[in-house]
View 1 (cartoon, one colour):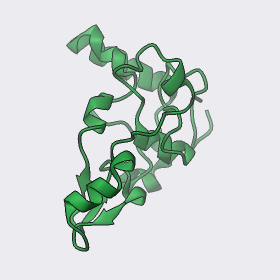
View 2 (view 1 turned 120 degrees about the vertical axis):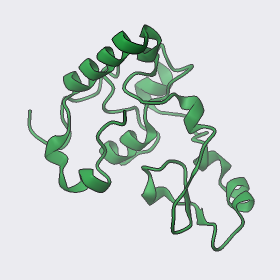
View 3 (view 1 turned 180 degrees about the vertical axis):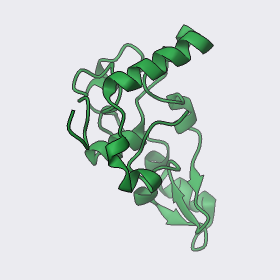
Length: 148
């Protein structure tokens, strides 16, 4: 399960954005089927440990911190060795900067979840903002790209 993003198919289909209530219902359904511990990662499909241990290399050589963050490429394996790119950009690739707002400061699950960094970027323009589509985030809006 991966949530709706405004990248790829989502660029021209923003009207398909799920509401915050729809996201919550989907996550609660997943937890009902797989176990309540799945609610600890909020609206994410993976926990922060995956995001802090994986990077993405695109078919055209760009290295990004996430497969959904094409705009945040930090280098190309066609121009530099991957080890050099990683060492020069470790903090950006592993999201080592502090997450802002609720996700980084107040959420009771911040030991295993820091919200989806790609959603934060695509919905707010700030990769380190709180996850805007997590129902646990009190600042989250029902919709960002369409009217309720």
